[in-house]
Image (cartoon, rainbow, N blue to C red; front, top):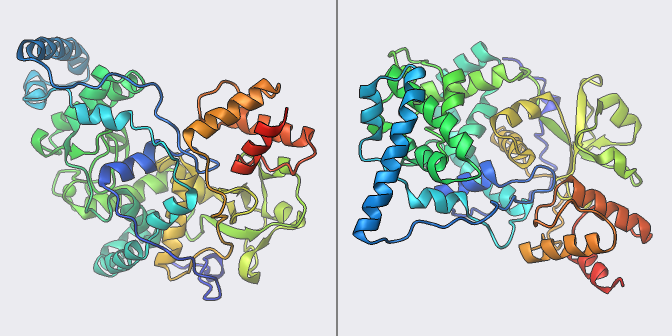
Amino acid sequence: MTRAKSEFDGSSLRKRITLTRQSACAQATRLLTTLALIMTFGYFLPAGENMTIMGPQKVHAASASDKRFRQWVERLWPSARRNGVSRKTFNTAFRGVRPDPEVIRSAHYQPEFVRPIWDYMSSATSNQRVTVGQDMLRKNKRLLDRLENRYKVDRHTIVAIWGMESNYGLTKGDKNVIQSLATLAYRDRRRRRFGRQQLLSALRILQKGDIKATDMKGSWAGAMGHTQFIPTTYAAYAIDYDRDGKRDIWHSSKDALASTANYLHRSGWRGGQTWGYEVKLPKRMKHARTRIKRRKTLRYWKKSGLKRVGGKKFPRLNDKAALFLPAGRNGPAFLVLKNFRAILRYNNANTYALAVGHLSDRLRGAGGFVKSWPTKHKPLARDERLELQKLLTAKGFDTGGTDGVFGNDTLRALRKYQKSRGLKVDGWPSARILKKLRNDS
Ligand SMILES: [Ca+2]
């Protein structure tokens, strides 16, 4: 596949940011990447209300709860049957399965301190991940040649997703997927519907015989194999690339990488094009223009004074792009294109898509971002987020509740507050603005 070189960020001039490798367990990584990221500001979604976690119980209590779970499984059977699952498959799938307290713990994990975007980015695109990824590019060259040719998705993006999802197959998750999903469906209030839908889909996969029940392993949330597909994604996009009759994303990296390429292709990936550009903002810019939902042509952005870093040109001025400021106006800024949105289909978090895009650029040999992260602005801890919301609400700026989650309502309220007090309107929830609010009576 030919690539327009100017599109990719390969400049050696760029300032390299120090990348430190953070060792995090696979569960935590999955949690951070798939479930907890709030899109625009790199903040994490707290997991919601706490539920009682199963603790040690007396034997008779355990058997009573066992019985309740068995009854629940039995009530699931008619739905499974309607989905074409045989009684044999169903029984085999649920053999030895019981609610897994670890799954509930992971589902309700609430980080006290949110992790700043720059920490997330530096572990997501660590030097180690880049080095191993480049090795994987070499080792899988022939396969990647063919995948590029067939799916028109570039090899660096396929490998970047592989690195993000399972550390190139190292951390695929070793939980029994049926057990994890049954636990969510049975016990987790927030993910009950998700758990049930995915569980039925997982049973259908077992029915088709792609994988044995005992080999169907994954994360606590049911993401499976090299590519961490949840069952419905697997059902729709997994590929038997090595043609052994099984779509085996657990053991065959060929099947897994082809499945990733197929998924991106079907999500609207544009071959030979990039995900986006790091840009330099003009000195003055209206806040309304910085909303990520605002998609405009590159010509429009260029006229508005945005420039690509390193003096490079935008190759296709008619392409539509949105402006993404993951750490507010003081951090790196990006214009993100259609391929960015294709990555979001994989995992709907802007920070995830940015990490995949950036890792793919680094695999191509690019350095870090030109603009540094505003690392002295630490994100607020949960208590501080709640306090900020309470103070804004008390002053008549509606945050749509006080839940510690900074969604659009909170950020809008914050901007209105800043405007009303003649402050710089950046909608950025900093320690400084919290202090200001505390003293503003
Ligand atoms: Ca296969």
